[in-house]
Structure formats: C-alpha cells, structure tokens
Length: 384
Image 1: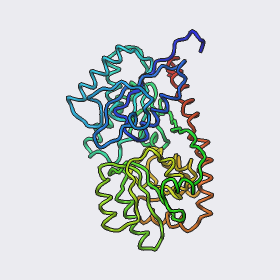
Image 2: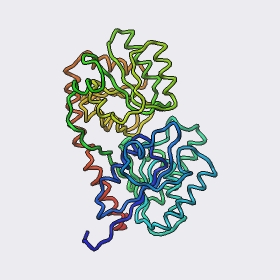
Image 3: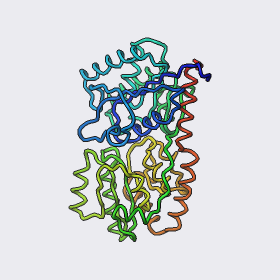
Image 4: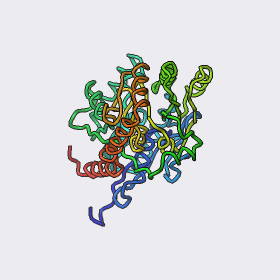
C-alpha cells in the first residue's frame, strides 16, 4: 500500500462491550491495527446494569460511538431505533468494511448495511453460536433461517474455532468458501512468580487452587462447578476453588456454597484475571456451550493445566492429555479430572508448559492482527 493510498475505513459493530471474549477481541483489533492503513470506528451500545462495561473498566483508551438502543435486551422498538441509527451512521461514515460481532449486532448491522447502500463489504464474526442451550425449537429455526439469508450477503464469515465453523455449516449457515477460522489472540502476559502473586492476592502459599473465570450465567453452569466441589470434598481431595466473575447466578451460587460450606472463594468481577490465574494451579470451565473462551487461553499462557467440558471449540485450545483434560459435561467426569491433576504435580507442570507453547503458536496477538489486516485488504480487492 503506497503512502498516497487512503486508509481502509473499517466499522466495528458490536451490541455491547460487556466484559468477555468478544469485547477483548474487538478492543485488541481497535488497538493493534496499523492506523495509517486502517481507520477504525467502534459502534456499540450500553451494557445492562448487572454487567461490567469493558470500555469503562479496562479499555478506557478506546473511543466509541454509542447507540442508546443497542444492547443485550431484545425489544422491537429499541431494535428498530438501533437499526435506523446504524443506517444513518453508515451513510454518514461510508465505511469500506462493516465488521459485525455477536448475534444481535450481526443481524442489525448487516441489514442496516443493505438498506444504507454503498459498497461496503460485510464481514461477520461468530464468537460462538446460539445453536445449543439458548433458544427453544421454534426460535432456533427462525434464528438459523435469518443467519442463512444474511450469509448470502456477507463477504466473509469468521468463526473463532473449528467446531464453531463446522456446527454452523452443518445447519446451512454460510458456505465453506466464505468461512475463515481466526483464533483469538492475546498479548503475552508479563512474567510473574506464582508464590509472589499469591502473596499479593493474599492467598495461602501451600493450598491447591483451581480457578474458574467467567460470567456466572446458566450456559457456564456454575451449579456444576459447585457439584464438582461437593464431589471432591466427599473424596477427601483438598482443592480450593476461586471464582472470578459475576452474573445472574452470582448470588445464588454464593449462597449455596456458604450453606454447603464448600471451599470456594467468590472474587466477583476482577480486572486482574491474569494475576489470579498465575497464582493458581489448575483452570476449570464447565460450560454447556462455548465458542473459544479467552479465559482458557489466558490460563494456558499462565502455564496452567486445564480441565474443561468438551463443548464448542474448547478442543482448539485444549488437547486432552497434552495440555489439559477434556471431559463429558457431568460433574463426576470433571471431578475425576481435577482429582488426577491434584494428585500429580509433575503432570500439572508438563501440561502447563505444553499449554504455554501452544498458546504462543496459535493464540498470539500478532497472528490475530495479521489475519484481520489481510482480510480487510482482501475486501478492497473485491475478490470472492
């Protein structure tokens, strides 16, 4: 690209920047792209009262255009308002690329682009999907039909994991030709010492800590985590669980843990999850459905073996038996995997080292930025 070539104008559209994987990825794209080649605009809504806003708590350096009606809740009037606001914005900014993220923004943003006209190429990222565990059968049929139609008018569809891509293709969303798999990328954490970090966080030096990082929502199954803690207690396995995150099941989970006297500390939402993971021994995720959770990439970077349910594209992060253990979704399987690691420090060490190697190879920030830069440039070439 010559010095005289104007930068490619990219509009990033996401319904809300609540703390979680999509917000982190969008923020890193906003920061990491070469501003002399890519002029980016972030368009988003506001978080709900029970959500932490990533732009207000962590990524305070990133400017955004806010649309009041855009957000988590589904409302015909608010969604129509968001739609017309997006149409107006697209006509004013005339982006070259409109890159939508997550389901709601993907629908509204792409429809608005079609109505607004212009030559912008549409790109959509599935940071997971809503095929399992979110909708009843009729709503699922409608959602799939809508995504199939939108797929026809989308230049490229990005899936953040191979299983996510295959699941979408299996129900007729998009085509193999249009799909790309871009793994999320995170910056390398600063080297830290586990024992020193425990002192900073006020954790015991000789306790085995197993850490869950994520929203406490139904799909993440915090109730299953509590079941695992009960099983391990009954077997005499000494593990203390740390839970970093909030959500609609936060209070009920705390109440049950207190009532059952379980060895669990609820930390609430934290901005220092890197430090918490560094101070831990094992990472756990017990979801019913996932895309490719960034918290597990962070855990791998921190040198932790991972225990997780084998759902979504978690298998892109965790190679079972190599850098962690993938299990069925029942608490017994998860507890057994935790017990294996709790009783074998050498296995924890070897799996943690392999996880760090794999994270550097597949989940680097440089790789993610390069993948998106190349795609946006390809959009300008107009080649299908």
